[in-house]
Image 1 (tube, rainbow, N blue to C red):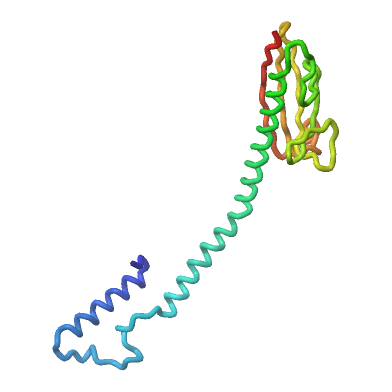
Image 2 (image 1 turned 180 degrees about the vertical axis):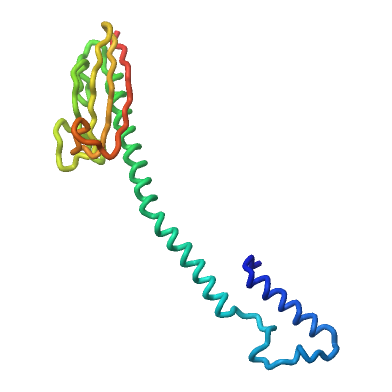
Length: 180
């Protein structure tokens, strides 16, 4: 079923031709040269050009949205990776025994600010390398004895220092650790 104006017009012409054939009476308007008959069911050049124009307009709109879609996908992937890095660091800090002052996996000392760099696979490093993609900054706040508060900030790309320039993206959380 066509919803275009030309499809409706073609349906009306076909119905008129069917009525002429079905009456059995001679109608001089129905006798025409077969080459120019309005009873043929085919697409006209105007219909084809309009259909191609609509298709081209839709394709141009879709191609125009591709860069925005790719950028959104890249941002979502980076935010997910940054959140996973933070979850791993917080889990490491929370699993540290109360008698220990340094976390087992990432060697983070409670109460001491630290910056770690992560590559795309989530491997940590204490120095900025060519494969570093994320920068994790841990800043500890003063708290009563036995409690530790930290602000964890993951930014990307790792080469951009958030104190100097604005990074492409960041994820920040506040975490509390009970060390009693």
